[in-house]
Length: 400
Image 1 (cartoon, rainbow, N blue to C red):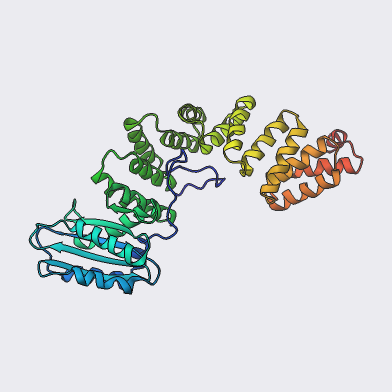
Image 2: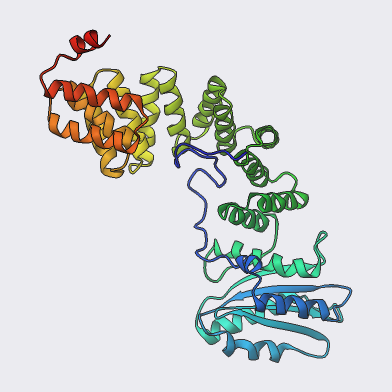
């Protein structure tokens, strides 16, 4: 079973939810592992055939200027000496990978990578980005070390041009998140578990693992991961929100509200917390409290049509039809295909005896978008009866 959410705006959170997370890269080099390109396969083969020293090697992936790879290959050849091994492969027009080692063990391969980075930057007059990975490390094979270097440069990309990152648990988390984005949850789970072998208390990895289980419908496993995360930091709003959402999925509304309120108390600037908390308080018939959080959500994300729709529905229930109409109108401008807002706006106009022709048009459109929604049909009938001069209450008595 896979969890499907009724709104794209209500979902589990995987990244830092306070807005401090760095911008992800447009291109992920770890995708080369999924594509299994000939260049990547060629380097893996050369690495497996190389006579590597017992003290290991360093694998480094360089992101250069476009089409500049060929001009910098000479730097690799110049640095190769009898006691220093280097193999390299062009992966794309702007990416090259190398493995280097020192037979004597007297020199740090990372120093060599830094020299190369500086020479490339000077020659190309551009910032060079690098991701590195050591072998041996943990239980990774030589082949996996190449994969780790690709994950490291994806990690470096979050910090922008000129950055250099050595593979770690965060690199694995980023790779797992990428697989999650591609809909490959099982593969992402393997990454997160591997990351937790390196960093057992990494709350982002634990939370990410819980999110994957939740999306796959394995709610009990998801809950256990979120519980682990909360033992590390009981005030992490991302985990509190995810736990609240999990209880919401399991129909435990009161528990869901409790966790979301804790998340709000820690950080009142997380849109998803304010949105879901407002929605659940609305369902619990607590309109004043619901509006407080929905107003906050609207401040945090003015382009959210769902927030405006929920506010409109509350005002409808409170018989504040003018306010309801304004909220629905704004929601429709953001999403003209929002059947609930179209129907709600139609009802708000009908109750005010305003623009009944527009109300009729919107009511028909909402029903066309969602023909099985009974409340949309009832609202359309009410507008048609008013336009035709029929008293809805008398007509209902006759029908009964």
